[in-house]
Image (cartoon, rainbow, N blue to C red; front, side):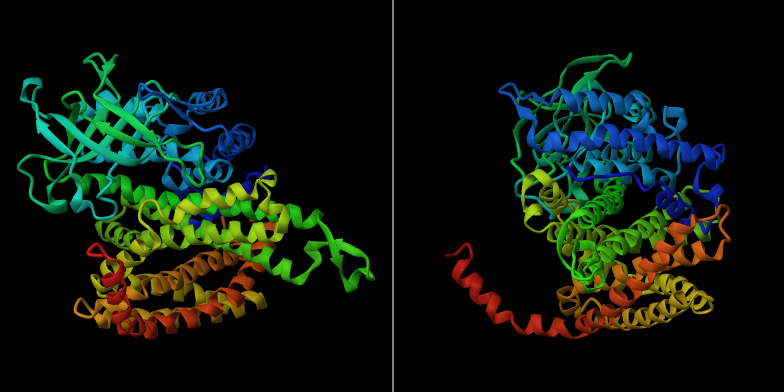
Length: 609
């Protein structure tokens, strides 16, 4: 099993950095900073002692589907989940009036990062449940919230997201699941039928009930995504008193045999085999996608936490192995055999791992602060700016950080060499578990298309311009820093901003009429933005650590680490932004010029063949 020790100092400082060193803005008003640090420490103990050992166990001891549709997990998994909910962790970022702790999303971010670092498969359940509760609070009736939300907050009735169908992956207009009004049971009651696939924790025995949020169509619904409605479908029906009743007409018919995250049962769910599962409308008819987007966007943001957590664990594993693996000789040692951490190429790879992790963490936590700003008493103008920035950053957080997590696990395996390819070391599991992050909740290409088509072309580059002003402010302050490495990095950040600005202007000029060329290079643009804005937040953290203006002092060792990582990130990652930006403005035409190649492939291999 690869090691993991929660980096509490780095986590706490990233939280403070997201609000420019003001702890009062980072956590709820009635929670002092010392108490918050105590929460982090308690969560670290749970993560290291319970979730981390479970990760390796669950990788080899998979959930089991039985003939009656029930799914059983291991005794270790059930015990871990019970300890998790007994500690009140599922409700950490949810309202106090429903039984939660009421933490800000920024204060919750390090908790979720720790869960994902130690056990990304397990974390999918409580993190997904937060999004389900968010969706109910945003759109459900008071009756639904009263009956279901408090149980979901405690984790005893976790929620799931049911979107994908065999014929409807990313194209939700193809969804066929049906919802028939059931007036005999009263208004808002429906009979749900259809099949859903890839449902994370769709069936299990960890909790006494499961609350499914299901997208389906009414009989007279408009075609396409405008005809989707959202329904709450419980595994077990719930009486007026809140007591669990009979089993609903919903059943798991298969569990996917996956590359990784084996501890998470990914279910094929069938609704309505016996006449229709009882469901309850959430929000308005034919407005289901808007209601579900609350959960979907939280999931995309949360993948920033998952990718960061996985990268942190990969980095710790690589450092631990490199410091102890004796292999090769080094001139400074007088020709004696040394640990591979002394080799320059290994050192660069390790520094890359650490710098990327810090950049991803600080970018994701900054996004969490924007989520909090939407619900704060800030002015309407400030909330609108936060909404615009969050919308722009969400595909970058999801797309860039998930790709970075995959790269980090590959780099860790490379440092382990042949030992990494052996399952016993645990690195192979990290590689397998990380691979899904670039796929679920929208592949990297889908995130990149959303960024280019909706957030840049559709917005005329306005959100990018807002971000650019913030980046330039940090670059200017860095260039005035007395620390030579930070001063140089500030100039590199400004140069990278200029390069991505040129690529953004080019994309905007393509407009709707010529967006094929822009979409062809959308992933390169997303990568350039990820490096730019991730580097910005990393350099911002390093500057704050050195300035000593935070409400609490950054530990000297962490300040040195952030400065070293910032300098490296500027020299290595930001220096490559020029090539990415140039490719964005040039390579799209090469793709469109190759139309005949793809048309020939369709002729030979397409359905008509």
